[in-house]
Image (cartoon, rainbow, N blue to C red):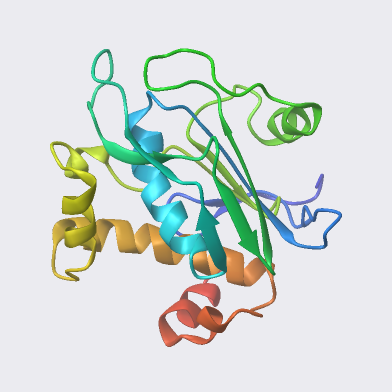
Length: 204
């Protein structure tokens, strides 16, 4: 790590080390830290959920919304990862939701979580997304403002329309996350063979 010079790669992601952070399972680790009240976390979860759908499957995702007061953007539709499970042959997903939408403490951080945060995000800024110990992003890849005033069903409708502003913004972040995961797993998943993703991987 000492000789590695961090550089910007895709979107707001930084390439911060060249040392993969694998789990005992041998899978690539995708680590997310957020909080229920946080509108930027709310926005980023849409991209994470859809990107990781390319590599596995979700159960236990609960629809919710960000805080209804004291934040720049309010009631942003989203999901909670607190009780979600993600199964994949390629990725191990670890999420820590530190508080709920009412600013009440939710999940405590463990020793391994603090090891990651001490290395990559010592100020514990949220949202925080780390892919394979090599690529990280602090903040959301797009503005939560585009989701303000929408219900979950409306967001899904917008995402299914490739010409909508929501779809264009979120899809860029979905594709960036997908490409970074593909880079981390050596292109083993089917989605990594799409021309769009291959062109993004070449930029990393």
